[in-house]
Length: 222
Image 1 (cartoon, rainbow, N blue to C red):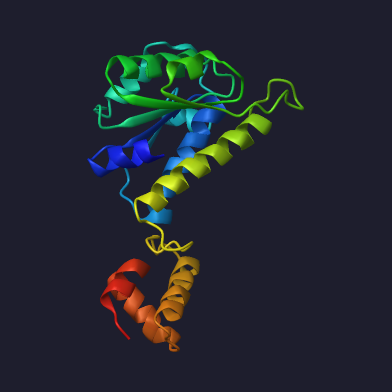
Image 2: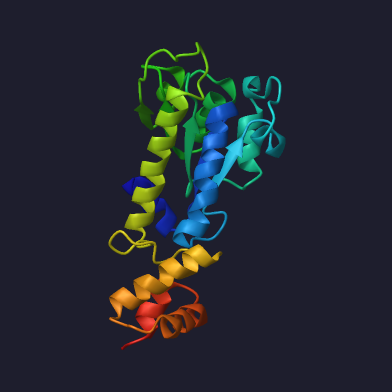
């Protein structure tokens, strides 16, 4: 994880690239980083074979395209400051493998998440992760055990990176976006606890003025 953190500290980004279920899992993890940790959109980017349509619908043969993955990365002006993680349960998806190979040619560090041992995807990555879960209950349905395993790994990667970037205090989401009443309430309780405050409305007013728990704790002294 320190490699990703080091790259981010010099302006780099983390990319997930995948197809089908694997691509959708990358989209889920990337999309949760801004609201959970208060980081800007675009710091963690998910690319899925077939584009936006593929998030909700299958796009035929998108995963077999050996050139589009790199093109999709180039559209984001990918550079050696970035890190790319390829996700493919089988470890054989051409779209993902070829993208990682092109990254290596351009001195861009790569990782991979797959569920088969010694896969071509692992061979293409600088930092391969293999979570071998065995045959699926419904043969070939990688949304099941493989998908669950990949989601857990993605959780671990993004959470570890955000902790190292200082986006978490203890085990609290002090940089979360206050985007609904549940999160505002959670934030108010954190402020009250940390500042030994007893007045809920006063704590809420301070929190909404500052915009985040972290800013409220830094700028308010009880």
